[in-house]
Amino acid sequence: MQCKKCGKTIKNGANVCPYCKTPVTRYEAGNSASNTVPPLNGFAIAGFVLGLVGLLGGGYFFCIIPLLGEIFSALGLKKARETDSGRKIAKRGLIISAIGLAVWLAFWLYIGITFIIMLV
Image 1 (cartoon, rainbow, N blue to C red):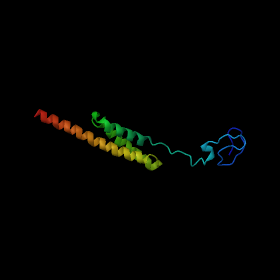
Image 2 (image 1 turned 135 degrees about the vertical axis):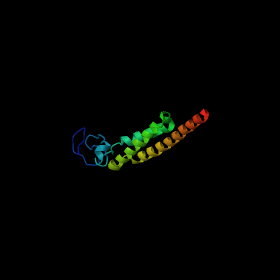
Image 3 (image 1 turned 180 degrees about the horizontal axis):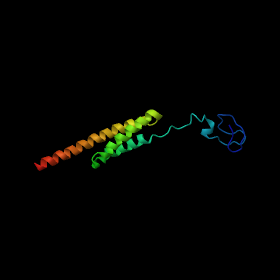
């Protein structure tokens, strides 16, 4: 590999150029294949965030936000099987969204039953 500053050939794995003493960045020092970052799984992240928002207060919109969290987390889990990225956060998004959906469904059922009792 070559030094970016002086252009001379240096050994692979060197931390500093022996000629100009310029530090070699981590990407240059290692194997480029081992330094690649897996692609982000946007569906998994969106599902997790929607699950959190749905659990903390998204049920006021008739449980739409936790339901969207379930959908996006499921899509993220499907994408994680293909790309091997975001599996854990997709599973957590499914769990949190399911809890939020259950909490808000129970809330709306309670409100509905209370309203019916008040009418009778």
